[in-house]
Image (cartoon, rainbow, N blue to C red; front, side, top):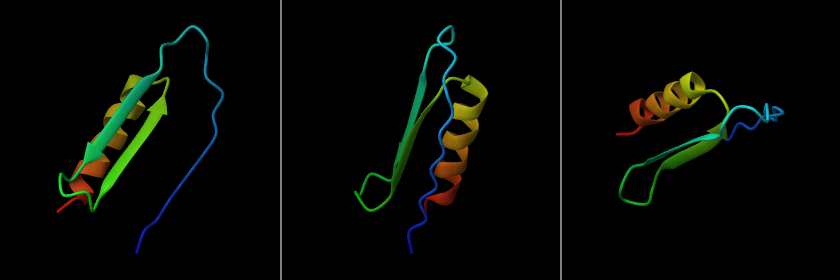
Length: 53
């Protein structure tokens, strides 16, 4: 089962974009995203890594 969540947030032009990506290495699982808040990028990356086997 694959769950995909999307949302749209307008970026503040004064803040740089932060990208994150987690890959299981076998091509079976992965997650990625872009945000303008470093704390959000860190949390989403850690959540994605914890969800992987």
